Image (cartoon, rainbow, N blue to C red; front, side):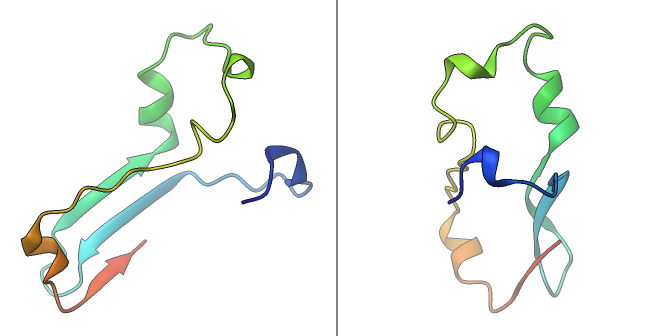
Length: 73
């Protein structure tokens, strides 16, 4: 994973979603606006190691892991 300073083109991921391909049921969803609104407006990210807030821990049920096809958007 590259450091944030390597993003010279200012690419910004706004949302990510995992769905059951066949039923379109949303399994996991995250978006920048919802995550940002959960923190105080004056939260200082510089106090954290950037690897802390650039990771997502997935914990899927057995039913999800057995799906034949998933879709990411």
